[in-house]
Amino acid sequence: MRNWEQCYQTGETPWDKGCAAPPLLELIERHGVALWGSGPVLVPGCGFGHDVRALAAQGVAAHGVDIAETAVEKARTMPGGGLETYAVGDFLDPAWRVGQRFSALWEHTCFCAIHPGQRENYAASAAAVLESGGVLAGAFYLTPNDPGEDDSGPPFKVSIEEIDALFSRWFERIDGWVPQAAYPGREGREWVGVFRKLPQARVAG
Ligand SMILES: C[S@@+](CC[C@H](N)C(=O)[O-])C[C@H]1O[C@@H](n2cnc3c(N)ncnc32)[C@H](O)[C@@H]1O
Image 1 (cartoon, rainbow, N blue to C red):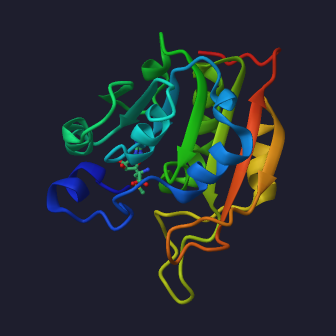
Image 2 (cartoon, rainbow, N blue to C red):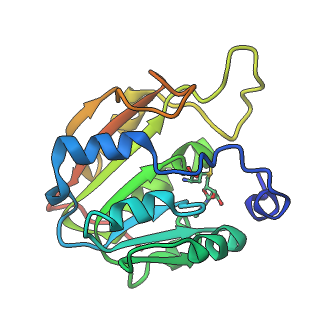
C-alpha cells in the first residue's frame, strides 16, 4: 500500500498538476452548476484541493477529504473564495461516513489510487454519504499506465464496464463520455461518468 503522507512530505506528487482537472470544468459546462444540488459537494482524495476550489468558485460549498495530513494542510493555505473546507480522513473507513451528508461527490484520481479490492467499499462510502438523488460524477482514469510501465499500481486501471457494474447497485448512470479537455498526456485516457443515487439505495453500516 502506498504511504500517501510520505509522498506529500517528500514532494513526490507527480499527479498534482497545479490546477483543477480539465474534465471537471468540461462537466460544469455540459451540465451546469445545478448538477451539484444544494451542496456541499465532497471531493475524496482531494490532494492540494484544486478541484475543491474550482467547485467552490462556482458558488457551491465544497469539502475535500484526504488521508494525507500534509496535503490537507497545504490545501488550507491556498487562496480560495470561502466556500471550501478540508479535512483529514479515510474515505474508505465506515467510521468516517458517520454523520457525513453531501448532495454530490466529485471523483478525480482517488478511485485509481485505491486498491481494486477496495472499490466496492469506495462505492458503498459514496452511496452512504450522498443524499437520495445525490450525484456522483467522476473523471475515471481508465489507462493510467504508459506502455511498458510497471502496472502493479497505484494507479490502477479500470474499464467503463467495471465502473458501471460497480456503481449500479446504488446508482443509475445518467451520462458518460470521453472528455475533450485533459491534462497533457491524459488525452483519451479518462472517462467521465455521472451517476444519480437511487431513491431506494440503502447502505449497511
Ligand atoms: C493520485 S492522488 C490524487 C490527488 C488529487 N485528486 C489530485 O489529482 O491532485 C490520490 C489522493 O488520494 C488520497 N487518498 C488515498 N487513499 C485515500 C483514502 N482512503 N481516503 C482519502 N484519501 C485518500 C491520497 O492521499 C492522494 O492525495
